[in-house]
Amino acid sequence: MASNNLSSCCYTGVKHEGDPRGRYETVADFQVYIIEPEKPNGFGIILYTVIMPDLFFGDPVPLNADMASFNLPEWMQGKLHPKGIAHVPETVDPIVAASLKLLREKYRVQGIAAVGYCFGAKYAVRALGFGGVDAAYIAHPAMITPEELSAVKGPLALAAAESDNIFPTPLRHESEALLQKLDIPYQINLYSGVNHGFAIRCDLSVKRQRLAKESAFLSALQWFDQYLKK
Image (cartoon, rainbow, N blue to C red; front, side, top):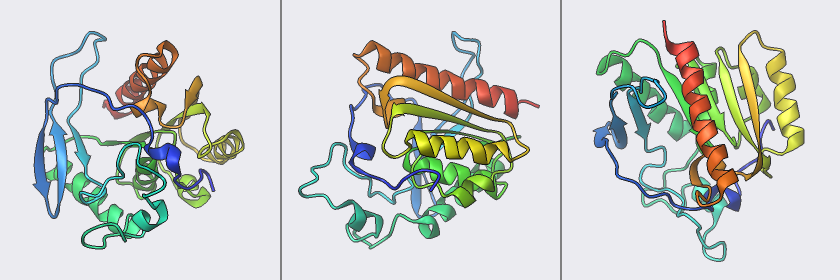
């Protein structure tokens, strides 16, 4: 494995507060959250049209779920979903494909980048492998196989946590070795003092964690500015 399977660290953390500025739309049989570009922000970076598809068909893992009552393998197999929908490539890949079609046909975008955290990193990598996107950025990835990572065809950036049982040091080094064999731009940033999930649900009251999260976010924007702008 280029990264290990999901575990309890994939759904534990701190929920962040904020005011949403986007909107929800229904695409086929799933929902997407959409936010369109704004004026340049304080860093002088142009924001992008962003869509966030519901990869789980309304069945996300509850934050900080009780391991005594929640069964992760059963969730993956769809046994906890009202319609029995499993959370596997056969059901997630079509969501990604429909989302990319929406961007191209409705929003007429000139380039597309994928962002994936944990579960989503696998599908960002898969999209970069079949040529569905022009670049990708992933953080603390899970479930990526060596074959999927070796198949990427475009620029890939990766944010890794110092302490991460899903993407530990040996697998990070193996992933680096795989990427070195490919004729693509790649980047791996390692953040000290943080754990799996830091880029989306760290404790913002802890200075080091907040800095790592914000740094990872800005790194993603810089990566896309470099490889999406024509």
